[in-house]
Length: 333
Ligand SMILES: NC(=O)c1ccc[n+]([C@@H]2O[C@H](COP(=O)([O-])OP(=O)(O)OC[C@H]3O[C@@H](n4cnc5c(N)ncnc54)[C@H](O)[C@@H]3O)[C@@H](O)[C@H]2O)c1
Image 1 (cartoon, rainbow, N blue to C red):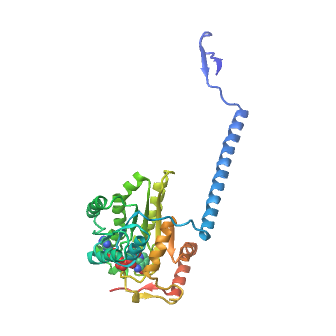
Image 2: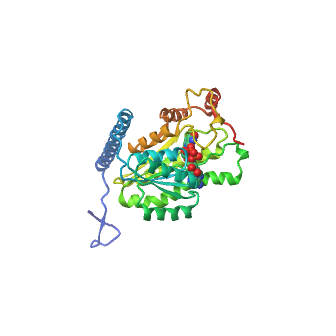
Image 3: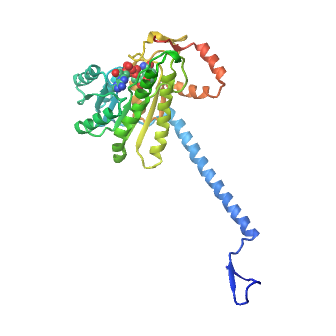
């Protein structure tokens, strides 16, 4: 501190004042600040391009699939279609399967088939995933009967398909409740134990209709876009803690031959280019993505990059592309 005499005070009073930095000190401070920013930017760019490179290499050399033996896999909508096939395939790998569905008969058939094949004991529960209280109640039963769920597959969904004004208010609510809100309720039910054990995997089944708008599917597309956003944000939430070992995977399948909609309503100009998929193949791809910790993928895989590239073009150009392919789902009314 420099000591200065104040002329307005007596000679005995001495005031101390902070020393102002001189030009040299100012310059050094600026140089050091700028070098720090440059250092941080270089470190960030190195990390960024290392991770981009690593992701590129993993496209060709994926990480080996992790074992699911002994894991407890809860699949919503296990009574039919993709959910049922997932149940068979996880059971075949030694996982304990817990199937949830509102369709009790279908769900029991899934479990019976698993028993017939001699896989580990599977469990079936009736649960309407759209109802939060029911989800919480059945989740408690699962915890008591089977244990902590370690892989949660949010698969149950519905797809009413008609022009926007033909969707009733009740139907729009139902689509959002089953296709989106249910994910929140099952996460509230099962994620806390995963966080506590720092072990788990959340899989969400969105759709290609969660990447691009499709005619006659306005509420469905909204619900599937929502699932995509939810999974991206959830990843950020979980991985703010760098030690977090909980993985997330979001899947965007193209049209699949299941009970979701009548495939006869799928209008495709070039069916050979984009064939309707088999639920067995889709389930295989989903399990493969989960076991390899893939963050997101379309089925078929090339559709992901195509859909992201398409976002670079103006909407009218995309409409022209849609007209060219003339692919959409006819109204089911
Ligand atoms: N089939 C396709 O073309 C396709 C394409 C992309 C994405 N998907 C998605 O894949 C998932 C599975 O669809 P899918 O094709 O197997 O359909 P699906 O109709 O064959 O099976 C869905 C299952 O979910 C159950 N379910 C419906 N509402 C429920 C509720 N409220 N609570 C509990 N269970 C309920 C049904 O009873 C049924 O067993 C859905 O989320 C769907 O949106 C399907």
